[in-house]
Image (cartoon, rainbow, N blue to C red; front, side, top):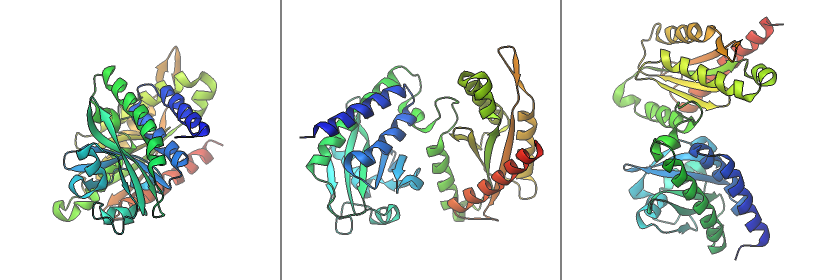
Length: 330
């Protein structure tokens, strides 16, 4: 049986999840983060079953960078958990034939606990706790994770009951702006880099920081800040092509995958469109709020072929532009 302290932790998590409202992506991110301390895990993930794959839609701990990772349902413990609807424990990934050993080594896990997530009576994914030590999880941790999975499943039910979008859309899109969220952005970028040899496609990655959100929040309140974020997102979307992916990565950070692009001026043309579109102020309750963007770019595969390197390059360039922007305002 769970201890009183553990039950209080579950109640605390349930309260924090309730504060997320219908933001399903936020619920999943919070649940994976709190799983770490609840069962003493090094990593946690929520994987959703999508076609033949299990996709990491929320991650925390050592698995944080693996968001968007896809593993085959038929060759993973999480896929077997969804198929059977049962809680499954792996005591050692190096000797367990049910697991995707390559994926386990990529995340750095040796033992794991997969708890099915139920939606409308059917398993649609798993809440997975992972450890870098063999034999870390037992029936006691399974009981705790089961309590947490019931809270997540309830959040999924209410999110779809009171929202016209389906579960997959809500899990992969930002609740405030309707843009793709970090999970979907990383998923698509991962697929782009992995499929390059077959497609031979040139692409660009933009990392975008919305300038001036803090002064808007400080001077006019967070309602004005949310309105500014929605307006900024709308303007980004309006200048993107149908083939591009526009995402809100969190807070005032956005990302765009430009695919395909022309080698010579495709990225620069996209940056100029965004800068022009976001330069003009927008009216909010009788005031004009100013928007602008700091944009860093990286080209694939000319400058980098790996997903992490692409993001790092674009991020570095964005922060340098933002630094110059602040210096220019002094």
